[in-house]
Length: 392
Image 1: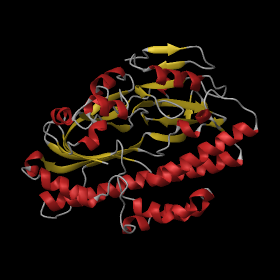
Image 2 (image 1 turned 30 degrees about the vertical axis):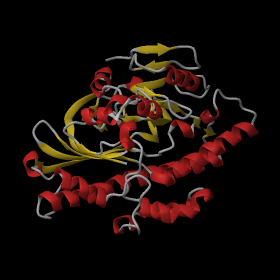
Image 3 (image 1 turned 90 degrees about the vertical axis):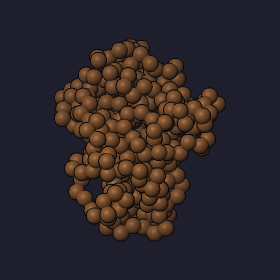
Image 4 (image 1 turned 45 degrees about the vertical axis):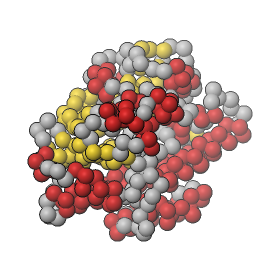
């Protein structure tokens, strides 16, 4: 479906792929579009909702500046999926045991591995750690022990089935504490530079770094490092999960994945658009150039999709990153009960206690409506439904 709404009162237009946008998110995208260096327009995905500084579900390009908050504080957050050779019949009555094994193998929330995993220790990215901004140099041990961990909030691990009964592993995670710290440091640096130059902005979190400056070069080094850390983090977890799946349902015999998809949805990249080389920030959006494979998950009781990009230039070759929240975590805790959670996650082996009510499916938009609104951006190629969901 083409652009549903266009705002034209900023320095550039805002193109929105939905009619369902809350007032605060619309205010944020208007503020983003008021900045003089934004290239062409701001693209807003159908899962849009308010975030820090700029709304989640926005795509922005510029040839001269980068806004750290337009990347997001969980740098490199994204999705990974593995198609296994197993079928639903292999799971039988093993779902509780498999969930327990997953929770033992992959630390969630604020927990981490007691020592760095061997597969993390050989990652070449550690050789660049000393070149990160000095504010994080005391975090290397913590970052190493958090490699291969899920985190909290809306991060999750799922075992899913497709309509053919094939078993998939699906997970959502990012760059953990090190990524958030790097983001916070550079957002603060950008704000300080705005003060030093007397630049007034609609919101402090829209502070930017000019390409060609030392501060921007340091940010680019750090953000690209964090993106690589996040991608490897997902790869490590996939390895741990594959081992546990094989142990529980395949007598410990390892298996070769039939298909792997791994994509960011909070990141920055240098790309060509409208004949110009620009830096694109995607905050809650996946890259959807023609033929690109991506993952758009639903909530913990809804379907998720593997999609293929159509390469729409209006969206800067982008698409949504999920269902998107329709209410805040605080509001969800006020509105829903544990009984609601049980009903909305019926048939899923997962937590059903008050601690995860803020992640209840009813707090999210309808994933199928989101996909319909972006039918000109991606096409679904696989439909997945979880039978196990482990929340951070």
